[in-house]
Amino acid sequence: MKSNKNCQSCGMPLSRDDEGGGTEQNGSKSSTYCSHCFQNGVFTSPDLTVDEMKERVKAKLIEFKIPKVFTGFFTRNIHKLERWK
Image (tube, rainbow, N blue to C red; front, side, top):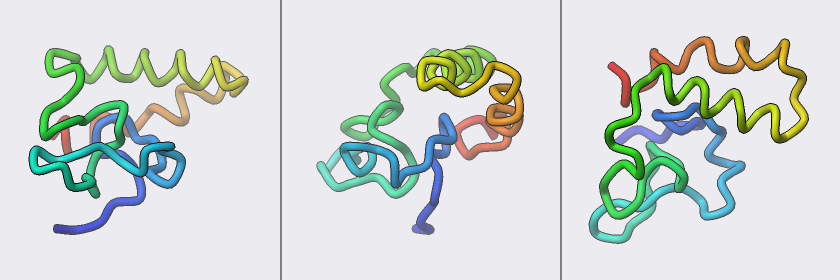
């Protein structure tokens, strides 16, 4: 299994995940998804669409004081991540 630098669902750098990543069904850490997106081998929001994920990430970036003008730049490639292929 390849190791990723960013969550393959939301794009967050895995190094920024306070829990060190999501968890697989067997309890091991996921090298693919963050703890916000993936727990116990399943997505935390399984019915979320890619457009809803982009809006969720934009809102979180604004919450972290990232200027709104940059949020589109940071979310422009979410649709290319593993989860959305």
